[in-house]
Length: 483
Ligand SMILES: NC(=O)C1=CN([C@@H]2O[C@H](COP(=O)(O)OP(=O)(O)OC[C@H]3O[C@@H](n4cnc5c(N)ncnc54)[C@H](OP(=O)(O)O)[C@@H]3O)[C@@H](O)[C@H]2O)[C@@H](O)CC1
Ligand SMILES: Nc1ncnc2c1ncn2[C@@H]1O[C@H](COP(=O)(O)OP(=O)(O)O)[C@@H](O)[C@H]1O
Image 1 (tube, rainbow, N blue to C red):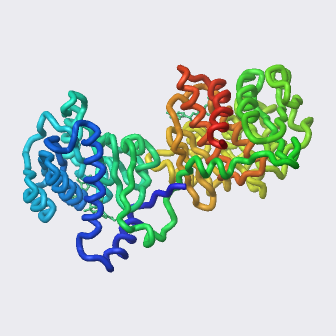
Image 2 (cartoon, helix red, strand yellow; image 1 turned 120 degrees about the horizontal axis):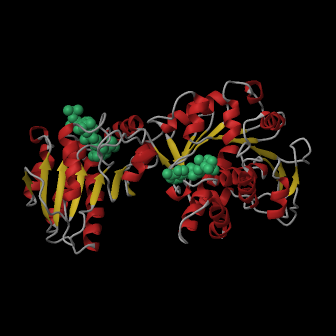
Image 3 (cartoon, helix red, strand yellow; image 1 turned 180 degrees about the vertical axis):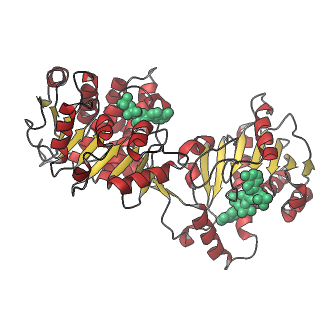
């Protein structure tokens, strides 16, 4: 598992560490790691010696890191130029080091650079980039490297222009090929549109770890976590002990949602899938292993329910939702079931002891919460989790999972190809299967989003992706993940 920390917690850790270290030590560590990564990039694209390196230098310590890293590259023979955003407030020792190593300053953006280091702002930024910095960022696209392509950009700590604690991108911002960050990841590296601006994120150890005692702002699961959590059958398992998931999904209007949620559930770890709803005949025809009935009330025992995908919002749908919420089982509410919660009609059922998981997209979130997720998606998901006492999976490019207890996760495997009708139904079925197999709801949500994202990526290898392709790709993804 990876973790990302808020700026205030990083600052506190830095302060603790600085007490025991000579001045400037952390900046030297940061700059050394940064220069190492830049040298590797340049080596891959024709060598460090003679390469043209452009430093964009703001007036804070982020600019200081950049100048020292530039000095190290200049010592290795790179032609290093620094464009200072506020020359009167530049990090003086950093500039002296650069000059001493043979680098110098320029006042205009050159037309050629083999590598650009973005040291305009780091974690000290507040608000969107100010006009001079924003104009510079806009002009970067015109820079060409020695191979004639767009000049590669390394962001120092974070791409300038992103909101570090929320992952929002409020205006112009750098789009980096690589982001070299120091001490720990920050939320902007893993959530929101900022994450996509970072390119490959590389962490330089500056010794912050032991003094970073705060809870992480957000966690990110890795393949090993998912493999360790994913339930697998043992020698004594039978179809019931593996868990049975119930699906109250689909309707006469949306029979496809029934089929897709079933496909998702069948790819999960349970030993049986029971379907309850008007599409019961279609479901059994397509998936003979499913045990189907027309209603929740007529369905045999299950260990968790998925309700809502394509269910509709009529009285029949209301009845099914009520039946599911009245059980003492874990319940996942998706799509129309979330819409049915609006107005508080089912409020008394939400105060249940058994786990509840909600999987809204932005529209459903807005309907239920009364406001859009906005710029801070982590905070928005966390608020809804507390308000509903549910684990909330807020869908998107970096799907967020938030618990009522304050834990937040960001999914790293998302892919825009998942933005296709019915892929959420597949996710709901898969997540429900994990719940029924006994996984704690937060792990079920994190694992389902992770595998669903990988399935989207895998399906995309064969061309344009539809929801059935995503469901079909879950199995090969799991085969690889679980070895
Ligand atoms: N923490 C650690 O462990 C370590 C941290 N390290 C490094 O320190 C960095 C943080 O440095 P920092 O605190 O000096 O802030 P930084 O990001 O350079 O920004 C401040 C400058 O930006 C300006 N500015 C602000 N907002 C702006 C905007 N919207 N648009 C334009 N300008 C804006 C602001 O101007 P002012 O508001 O003062 O007018 C001020 O001049 C961190 O990211 C990492 O690289 C490493 O050296 C080692 C260990
Ligand atoms: N731009 C995007 N990038 C990555 N994933 C996305 C994007 N847009 C949607 N998704 C994912 O696709 C799925 C869509 O779910 P949903 O909106 O419920 O679709 P449907 O209701 O049609 O099944 C979710 O898992 C969501 O996270």
